[in-house]
Image (cartoon, rainbow, N blue to C red):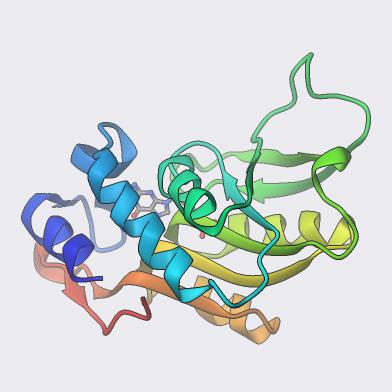
Length: 193
Ligand code: 5GP
């Protein structure tokens, strides 16, 4: 998606050969107009896929995912990274090693928000090693749902996440696939959306 690629080119900071900072429009400050056009584009691509729910992982996936769900006319489910007093009992959980924090958390889904036969689109901000995406898929499948595709806004194609998910049979697409962050420069591949 040209609009997203342009914003990354103009505003992102390359923190290292593997980490990109996009705090000005996605991870800290959020640009709602950009998020809406991203959601619209994703919805357009999947409008004939009979999506019944959009899933995302808190917190940076929420903004683009809510607009995706809005334009598909379905509910959004936010997978939680920690349990709380209001989220206990009937849940599915799967451990995830956090890419940016180097800690492990239990990705959690209340059983009431997944139904047998649900067709789920998973939308997240970044795809790196694929651990968060894989855990999200396990939760969907534990509840009898099917993952139609993973959509990441920014896919670091030089890391193993895309390959890992595709090897497991999932469709993976991205609005801004990044070939490399070497020498402080973001190099893009051709986008799927
Ligand atoms: P994965 O599970 O695919 O390894 O990592 C996915 C999660 O890690 C994303 O949801 C995102 O929060 C975080 N992440 C991975 N790589 C980056 C990065 O380069 N920059 C930022 N800001 N977050 C990242």
